[in-house]
Amino acid sequence: MPRVTEDHLAARRRQILDGARRCFAEYGYEKATVRRLEDTIGLSRGAIFHHFRDKDTLFFELAREDAERMAEVAAREGLIQVMRDLLAAPDQFDWLVTRLEIARKLRNDPAFQQGWAERAAELSAATTERLRRQKQAGRLRDDVPGAVLQTYLDLVLDGLVARMASGEDTESLRAVLDLVEDSVRHRGGVQ
Amino acid sequence: MPRVTEDHLAARRRQILDGARRCFAEYGYEKATVRRLEDTIGLSRGAIFHHFRDKDTLFFELAREDAERMAEVAAREGLIQVMRDLLAAPDQFDWLVTRLEIARKLRNDPAFQQGWAERAAELSAATTERLRRQKQAGRLRDDVPGAVLQTYLDLVLDGLVARMASGEDTESLRAVLDLVEDSVRHRGGVQ
Image (spheres, helix red, strand yellow):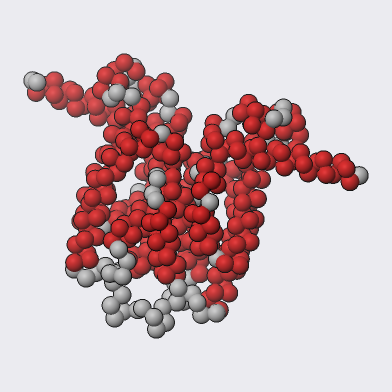
């Protein structure tokens, strides 16, 4: 493909993804209708769905971008740092709430659940790898299986988003993350 | 009021609440339209809203009933036992997901947030009281303020519902609750 077309294609995909993210953030998953996606993106449905097959595909691509960015932080500094970053960027928040809104769909729509699980796998792999290294370095408690620690951290991430939504203040949530960090740490010597 | 009328009133309210709970559980908060509430409850909108002012009032009354039941368990056995009970009753689950679905509304609608907070206060008070007694009895860690422990347990409750929705298996979540229980306990002597 000639370079100019390739650049144009990338810019167009970017425009669609950025607009779609704003639309989901503003209206939520269910109410982000095709009409509203057209308005926020500034393109016709024909143009949008030429690049992304349907609304779910768009949504999954945004989730994949998130997972990729979070996985980079998780691999280097752990999932708790990912959560501290969330607390420090409340403008990201309205988009994050869509994670909770799809709970019913995840439960009742196996194809959607499958698509979502695939996008979450990258972040999950990064967390597993980081936990493995921390355990090797003796920084992680060793009386609880790694898989349980991972489920625990995933649960805390979802709970964090829900509590932010309930209007819990950031300071309390920071203190909770300190407690969470402490609860996965190796307790050797230090109480 | 004569007894028979009072009984009739109570039965009618019960019919409405039970039907509304099924309706919210099946369709989710947003999609539980007035038409669907009529169908599930088996009464006209006139009859329903004679007893409960609007959809939000109905929803809050269901949340209040939950909070009351959970507060009884929380006062006696703690919030972690409330969560173990949730894991043991997955049939309650579809209704519980509405807790997550209202996150955006909680954030954007101050009147709704206020109504929700009032209904959550009873459970919150029961948990606070139980934590206070546990602390007095020396069973709770004393290096972290009680308010932080409470926020932590609230966060875990929301996270638990979200992970159940993502299809996390019950066995892993039980193990996570053991870890959570351990992380709020006093560490004196025992590692």
